[in-house]
Length: 151
Image (cartoon, rainbow, N blue to C red; front, top):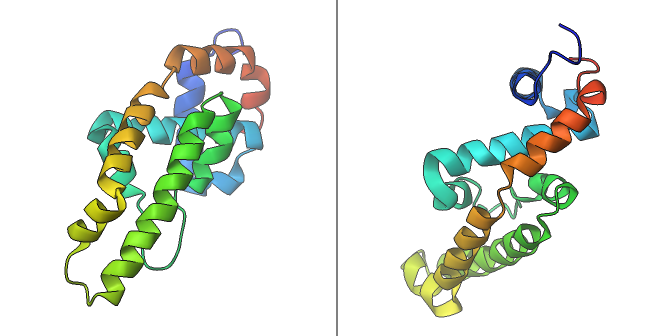
């Protein structure tokens, strides 16, 4: 198949498959942007914005599972979601610390008290807004030659 015959959908399938089976480190930076955008949209499409947020919520280890998406969101112009994800991650850790300090008694009480649930609603709205498949697919079409390298 020549580059002219390959569609954005073909590239997405090939890159997502490669990243899934060989790890995202096997992809170039531009290919990773496509992979993480697709991964993000799969979560949102299958579980809504809440599903994405829930499945990437931090744990007591102090991780930021949203950080791996920051470069992609910024690359495609979705900076607002990066800011919100960082705020949510920090506040979630604060709630988690109080919950653990309090003997794991009532996570929801701490979440409500510190405003985590309100922030989560705002985060969900921004996640819904931060989807522009046409913009991303057009970018893939424009960059298909470089994206097809090594896949």
